[in-house]
Length: 97
Image (cartoon, rainbow, N blue to C red; front, side, top):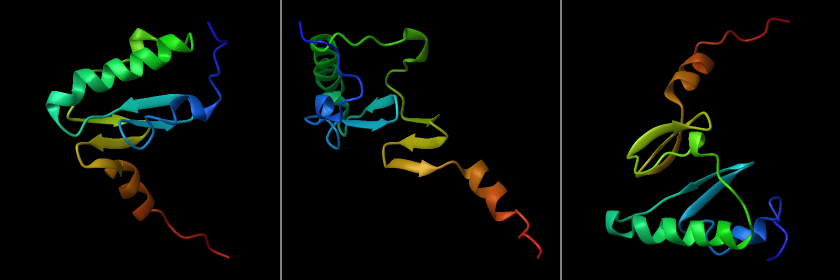
């Protein structure tokens, strides 16, 4: 079995932008159609197994329509800014010189 290449983006090149989004050391497997979810997860797990990578079950979430992940709101439309963080930034006072 090949050595794990956890910092090597080409490991996920076949999935990124199609069924996977990667941010630092976090990943999201996404499906456009509900019927494709199982196949997309199988592809992800097969790739992880091939490279000997493991997931932390405490950090895994499955079949979510909308959720706050990595400080952003993730839903079927994609990744959006967290509304709470946007509100804080809009209410910030400008520095005074």
